[in-house]
Amino acid sequence: MKTLVTGGAGFIGSHLVDYLMKSDNEVVVLDNLSTGRVSNIESWTDNPRFTFVKGDLLKKGLIDNLIQDCDVVFHLSANLESRMGKLSPQVCYDNNIQATFNLLEAMRSSINCKKVIFTSSCTVYGDASVLPTPETYNPNPISIYGASKLACEVLVRSYVNSYDISARVFRVCNVVGPRLRHGVIYDFINKLRTNPDALEILGDGTQKKSYIYIKDCINALTFKFEKFADRYSLYNLASTDNTDVKTVAYIVTEEMKLKDHKFDYVHKTSDGRGWNGDVKYTQLSIENLISIGWSPLYNSEESVRLTTRDLLKEEGGFN
Image 1 (cartoon, rainbow, N blue to C red):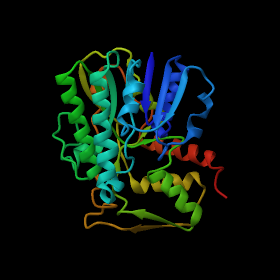
Image 2: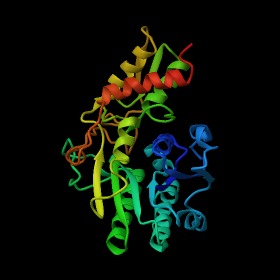
Image 3: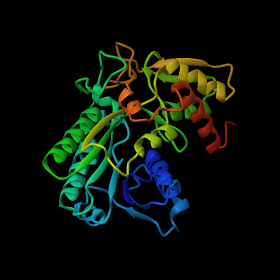
């Protein structure tokens, strides 16, 4: 198949590209390299089945041309950080909502490309009162980022209902693994390299979230992707459990072989969050994905430990 991967030079996108190329698909990557890296996909640049286009979905004419002879779109490009949404709502609107609208408009006009796989976020649920949270739970995002992702979901669903388009939407929760360049594990490693005696932790350390290893994520995104069983399907994508930030800190310090250090909890909100808009407790029900034959290989703590080892190896360890 010929696939278009938006955000294909980024963390999740580049691992997806690896999978698709190794499976003998033809792959077109669209990425503006604002956070993606050419180095993530450079092993494929000389392959005749691979095409890289530097650009983004805000250039409507560009996506209109790229999409015409593609069979399916993996729509991964987005603003990465939920914290960033607090500082720049316009970035969330442009890179999430407007970009998704432009993609769907291009699909509507396309003769061939009518399938999209979209990565949404667990942040659409906000402070869910039901844990593990099922897909039927009413979303109530508490951050601009979460709101923008939910808006994208609604756009996708409306285009499926109105036009000849099929979609899979994944509400993804904290994907980790090699090439990761943001998030708590990456931040902890960098902080401890700067000061191995003390680790600054945002919040009170009791925040509990699910972490899913990149291999599990890619296996889910590509699970029977060649043929959608339904016009529209919505899946939570996470591990089967969650772990708290303090445990993540212990795992990172263990893997870095640091013994004499202290944890400094800073920038806490009144209820112990790391920042306003941070969802303090997240655990998703993944029964819908399990029911179609997918299941994760790793739990949250295993994913965190594997990722810590991956990043330390990539960055040359700790000196």
